[in-house]
Every structure is written in C-alpha cells, then in structure tokens.
Image: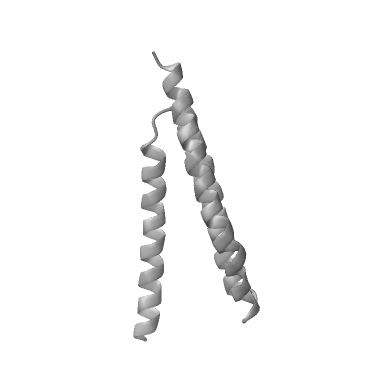
Length: 99
C-alpha cells in the first residue's frame, strides 16, 4: 500500500474526528436553550458549507477548482465573526432573563 494514500486517509479521518469533537463541544458548552439552538443551526450550516466546499474543490476540474478558495477564505472569517457576535448577544439576552 502507498504511504501517501495511508497519510491521506489518516489525515482525512483525523480532520473529520476534529470536526465532530469541535461540534460536540460547541453545542454542549452553551449556557441556555436559545444559545444551544443557535449553535446547532450554525453547526449544521458549517458542516453543509464545508462539505460543499470540499465537493466543489474535488469535482470542479483543475485549475478552476482552486478558485473556490477565494470565496471560502472571504466567507469563513466573516461567518466566524458574525457567529461569535451573535452568540455573545444571545448569552447577554439569556442572562438578563434569568433572575
């Protein structure tokens, strides 16, 4: 068996495991029901988006597939900033509601 293939499969599995663990802790470490529901929605959209990105990167012929990195590298930081700001806002709202 080719060592490159073994590395590719092991790297893919480690990346997938990291995504699953990160998703699990992002959802379980929330403070309230509204925040948890928000994190579940964000997790679903993130999994769909990253899977779509990887599919496009794989299926679009080279070198055009590499152009998918441009919207990905723009959208990812913007989505992270929005998600973090919204999560902080939801936490503040939930803390005001609890006595």
